[in-house]
Length: 412
Image (cartoon, rainbow, N blue to C red; front, side):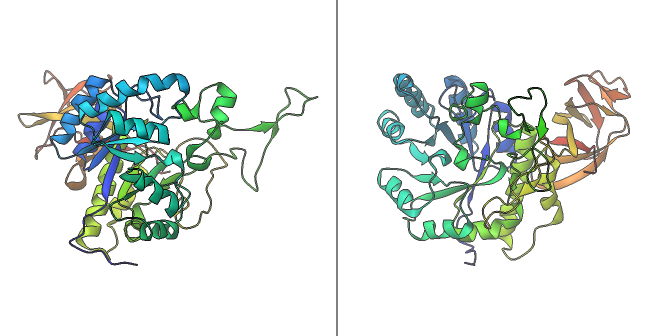
């Protein structure tokens, strides 16, 4: 393994931002860059995403804090949509985005024309899996390629060795994975009419399947693969928190966290975990990560984790169920201080005397008893049982705005 050079830049930490709240969470907890979508041409149609004005405001917020912004324009664009691309691309350039994530060459050429000066990033949807393609895209003007998720670390290392150093290699390190190659799936379109290649995936790969014989309608028979159950297409989630040195050695220049459709809590926790992992690696490349950092990915809702294809594949599916592992829940977000009290905005019900774990930038999580809670008028309450109600919590040490309060709800 190539040793880490103390003078070399750490890989970029790139976090998802489905809306302004999620963007602020990612920035607050240490993202170097965020990627987000507009109201069109993005591969995630379920989050709110950003209008042209919201995009400009988001870029201003991020840039003021030294964070880059990349805008998705990576759907499979049809003929009738091409007319809308010039305005979309011009608005992106005017907003000051740092990069445009594109899939096809036609959109790439239009981006170069209508948003000159904005970096071109080739989406993972393009399925870049070899050095020849990466090199050709660089020669056409791409600044980075977001590699196919199906590559091993050794394949990435070869791509790095055989492409110009000016070309950044970006790779997913955490989050949901698709059963199809680099997200090229037609199941959702076939079953529901919602096109996954246009940001509307209904995730039929997560469904439980059965077999029906045509002369016996209404009599489904279970489908099994091996000794497992019938969720035969249900991919595990990716988690590479334990393998920062291997990713760096392979030449990955941007660590990408999947999850634009996920919550601000998810954006904060995953960003914070990988921020710490990268910084600990920079401090001492050979030292194992502290246990609390390794535990953080388990404190968001997730499917069973694996390392994807990086080490040659393995158990990639969860057959028994299509659901999530959820052992922790967010109960509040700190809005600031009032006197000696933290001002909390409730997210899930909690009670006087509960023990919370507090997550804030720059320090490991710590525990805090929720004693003496009161409503916004200072009247003592036994519980915070109204959505987003304001709660005052006496604290000895100030808690910064944006700090997250959470509690354990399961030992799973």
